[in-house]
Length: 338
Ligand code: FE
Image (cartoon, rainbow, N blue to C red; front, side, top):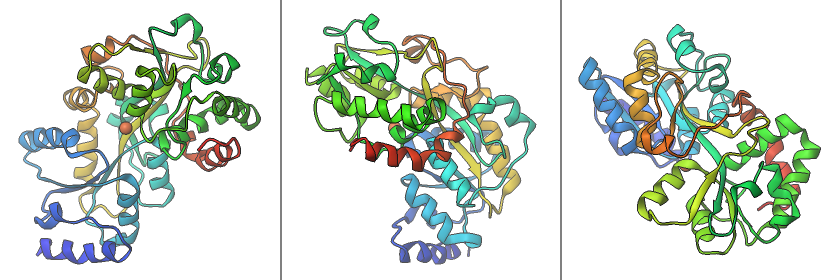
């Protein structure tokens, strides 16, 4: 019966053009998770949890926006108990659209630092991703680099590569810059970046690094796990990471995270799962599967990742990335950042 109901609910989603189906065809007797993290990043965790607790987890994966649209369309009838997605901008949107419910949990408050979770408990960071500067080691000395703002300096004219401003990662980066420096200053910086571009923005972080490695440009801004993936694939690549803003606000960090849905049928079980995800056993897996940093500061970072060096991270609540997302998008548009 449960399976049938789920198919009915799917109809709503299909009608609004959200094309998600299959894995939920099975009866959802356990928890139901909608996840924008790819299957290979969550399945090992869910399997471990099921083995440990006997709680069955059904899940579907899709991009953040369709999952949010689906939750909204399904409303009360949604089978989802939990949403997992990347970027505080997306989590903030989900909370703003009213699909997430506040959770009060001493475990989560202890395990997850305040700047990596919603103040109302509607979402909690579970891994940290650093968006930092990457440079060509044969053409740039680390000493020439300093801050994100520094990449607006004319010495980088024709030497900078960036990913598109359409990506939420860059919207969040610029939003946090607005939060700390104000809109006027942030716009000057983004205009400086645009002036320094070697070529039109790329569709993803890997392409940014490939362009730098190929000599098309010398510096860029990327999430560190993409650097990790590239270096694993092509170990000899002449690229290195640089930790900017160490004398000031710190490196821009973002999160992947989770929240309990407003219409969760298994609310307590969902809270227990998020609590488990914030603890030692899961944090190690959660972070290392994607070469990210554990959100729980008590957990050691994977050896490959910690080899990139320690850094000071921005302590401003990542929720600001959501609050200022619209302002950030408009600012980048004014600055001509495509
Ligand atoms: Fe990513």
